[in-house]
Length: 638
Image (cartoon, rainbow, N blue to C red):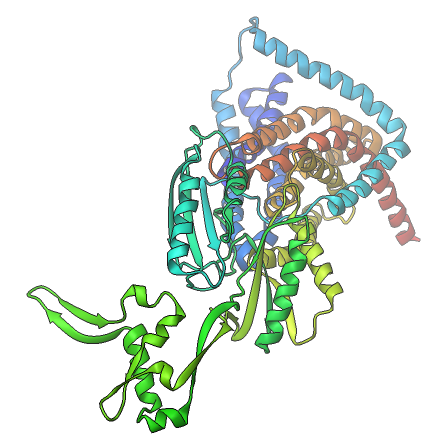
């Protein structure tokens, strides 16, 4: 992902240097003189652009936790490529211009050159006339910029929040959670029925299923697991979510064995194995109280239309047979509890009674009752116990039997009993909305202080990332401001450059909304990248305007107007390079494309919208802040 984005970044510095050298060549300088003058004039601008862009990645490099580990390579790769491109553009590019550029004979150009150059001249002419109007109506332009700031904050609050985009990896995991009193034979038959239905789907390549694999509730008889592989993308007619929706309707007709399907994700953070992607865990000290509240939470979440595939790993409704021993009667018959225990273990345990030795191996001989004798509890009446006198006494002669409920498994988390409710999202529902809804519902239910509820796994990581997202963007802004302040030795000019960012935020969030994507962690990385990309326009304008004010003693209005017109071509070229570098991510398809697409969408949308506004708002902000700086200096002298 970083290498794809870098293709649009690493050429920016060379574009700016080459364009400035070409401008001197067009003014009549020799190749060597043009290379020296052009690179010298633009060197500080290129340095400011690259160093401030690398500063954007400092917060990403310092991020902790799972998210920090995931994006550290991304930040290091981009930072290294930008620094190398800075060195190359200030050394190799001028050298190549001085040695390779030659005076071209006057000749007619092809149709492509004439069309592109005519388009640029048309754009430049219209920009010149519209810039004059924007500078004449500065207050209106400034109001538009302030409206953009308010719009960016509003859109960031309104857009649905997510963690990682849901991927179509071509794999689906499934789990079966049948009734807790089901037998192994019935569970095996239901598994075979479910697997045959899934196999019949035309987009399924193969499926593997087994019982006792646990569905978050341990290895129990009433649970099963399945691993489904779909056909390759070129042969498939539907996405993994469409296949899951198709199979849900068919599998819903199988009674007593609800089946839960979820697409396998490349990135899944923490949490235990469950029937769905997201988890909410209750912990408590009293198992009875915990089981009661686990059922209440489960019923509430199943009633929410925003959630799908809601299930629990609670396994407290299994069947057990209690053996009630009449101890006086057993004593009269010469039977003690140890003899009863050994008789039951001989029948239903796995007692090793012998070892068979062969030349190559040895085999343990295990004794137990034949399978047809342990299918129903009535078999206990056929058990005989050897008394002390050597007589065989039926178990029913001194005991009675009672059927009761039992827990098949009791899950623990951090040494406390835990009940985990897992869920998926309904179509069109963001993870942020679902998390807020579950939190509000549990708050209204009024759980006691002895039962604690919290999200686990991916949902928990999303909650923590949601708290750090504003801090991450703020840290990137502060890092860029500090770097620009050091480079320009000014408190004011960095603000002019950073004024380009609200429009980029509006474009990025609007593009995500139009494309139906939420503001996830990948999109946030795109917004942070926009901070480094969009400010390049401001740097080129401000740096050139300051040079004109200092060297040619021009007024701020004249300097900024001329700077905008002279820097129009490199601004358009660098923006197009970055935009085209991100376009493959936005339009890409295939395995893993869902994970990269929000990055491309946010960059493309942010660049398109900011390019239309910053060419007009940055000059106006520069003039207002320059006036403010002069007022502060006069006040200081007084």
